Length: 155
Ligand code: IDP
Ligand code: MG
Image 1: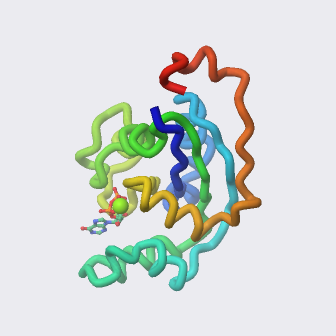
Image 2 (image 1 turned 180 degrees about the horizontal axis):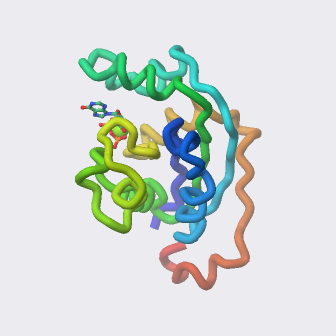
């Protein structure tokens, strides 16, 4: 099973709503490791880099003004199949349609202000992590819990 890294953003709506702790708790509860963490203000330049696939879409101007509207928290998360595990934990893009039990499903009701970003593939994860973190800002340490969180072949 692949040990993966993924980029998570706790978006400005969640920061404004004082939900940083609750979102991080859900990630920690799942057993994933935080290997990088910072609070920052995204600039229009970073937004265009990050959302390169959406820049030409009609909703991009709104998305840029939302993602640059205030501080956000960037997290580098590591664990077995962390990319898919995080996408499942986040729920569907439109928080109104996201299942109860997911972060978006429980905490939001908007398609745009949907609290959290998570990379959608290994290629995106690598590309996006490099936007927010230098290699020396990531600290991956084995957790003592590994043997009680995952079977040998899952680690
Ligand atoms: P994802 O965040 O679930 O991967 P994407 O389709 O990659 O969803 O869209 C990126 C972000 O752009 C979404 O999380 C959401 O904040 C915003 N967004 C997506 N679709 C729309 C839309 O149709 N209108 C407004 N904002 C949107
Ligand atoms: Mg996406």
